[in-house]
Image 1 (cartoon, helix red, strand yellow):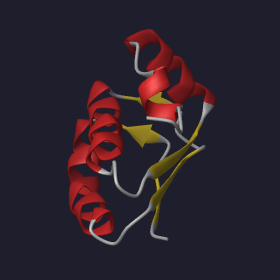
Image 2 (tube, one colour):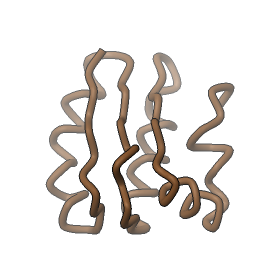
Image 3 (cartoon, helix red, strand yellow):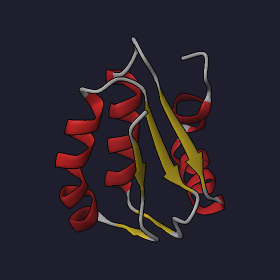
Length: 87
């Protein structure tokens, strides 16, 4: 299973740099995203993660969140979408 480890700071420029890696990994089946070290969460990261979860409906994307990512997802109303395995 491909895995992507996110850096501490995930702003627009970082997420843009990650797009090719996400695109490539999404074609290979289930994807594991390690966001446990993320301390700064940009809205664009939440959008990327939500898109990855929605696009992978057939095989799944698992996200290991950091406290900062959990907080940002809660504030944006995306917690259930990003972390609920039954989506």
